[in-house]
Image (cartoon, rainbow, N blue to C red):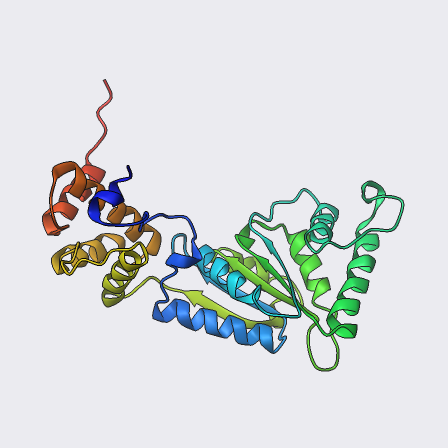
Length: 281
């Protein structure tokens, strides 16, 4: 039996997996989600969302994908780990994800230009003739090579008089910013730039409450005291992933030591355990 069952929960509330069901819409995340949807609806082209590790970019991308895939006349591809050995390999993967057939001598012998011609034809057929919205979302975009970023710049050239044909969403750590700003004609094409910041202190309590509720907690007695939440904020500085990890450990602590509530002392004990040096024997 999972520890959460012993606390009256139906499922793990503080997993660090990017489950859209547990996507807490803080002020920052709600604004980012809204502005991304507007950018896609208006077919503005390139949107860039930046944030430090653990600020919730991947969960945001999963929630956005979930919402967009429910829309009619929308074609979407998602890349979670954009590591490619060459631009040709990147384009071949794009074709596979968009289910674009390649009618030629075979993908092994195809050049970047060959792929670009096929993808251009696909974009105009689907995006213009059939009036579909075509979305490419790339998570961890800071991993992309300059060559692959140049490919994206070229794909953004395809447009009508009214809109960009490809809607490109890049989720990345802040280290991408100086690299992308140095690529001619790519920086100027960014229609939306948004930086995700950590949660504010009052939002930490809301996040914890939201996740517990999503996991099935219905008791009138809170599992986390206000002093515990304040200590969690001070320790994590509002980073969602760090909050989830610390809260997970706190609930395990309750079960292990048969306690009823996570209070300040519980969190302090967990923090002390984290910072104690490991003794090698």
